Length: 311
Image (tube, rainbow, N blue to C red; front, side, top):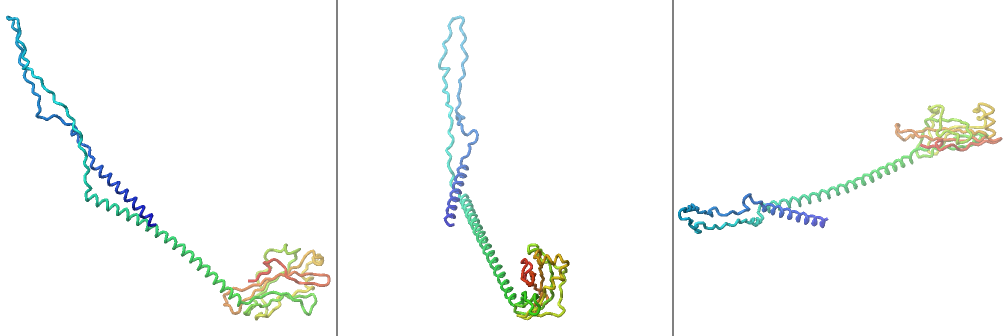
């Protein structure tokens, strides 16, 4: 940067000297006034012409004329026409005022150049500083997001988690129970449940999201509070229940022939007992496929991902 500054300073100094020298010469070359370029003869040099004497009259009686006197007609010398050459211009000396003006202009040029370089340097520093601030802000935002996720993970680790399992009934054959078990670290209270039975050829014919006949939840008659590790029955289902949900013999026969399948899905809505009342509730969705055999039946998990969500 110093090398660039010295080079520009030398160029500006040379330009200023040349411009001032040219302006000084143009001031000394003046055009001469009209009439001064030609020198005339002195005014006192006059050409005198002598008077010519009257001619003598012829003498008629004598028949002869008097000879002309040559001394009476003297010859005049003609003065030469002289043209004077223009005077040689003499360059005036560099006055003190011009020196002060040149020095002031040079100082202004140098100060202007230095100011421009300082402004450019300042702008570059501001740009680098703004980039650094942006990087610091982005890093701070990432750190805050990571801290928030970490805090949320700690909170989620301490909250209750209800997981669904299917257990065969120990008392009745071909009978099953959908169980909700608290696998979290704090107690949970079940707010309500919802369930639905649907017939479809396979899972691809199910809706992408589960649909329920009503938006209202079935609230348990007795409050169900599950401590960590405790379970509660959510939905019982047996072979005998199939006949009650089939509207016709044809539908029952198609299920027995495996032409159609029976899907049972639902959800459990619960709340953390240690959380504030305004905290939103949590939800666990589940879906099962009832397998109807000739003699034995089964109930296994099935369904799309949206039918088995945990929030």
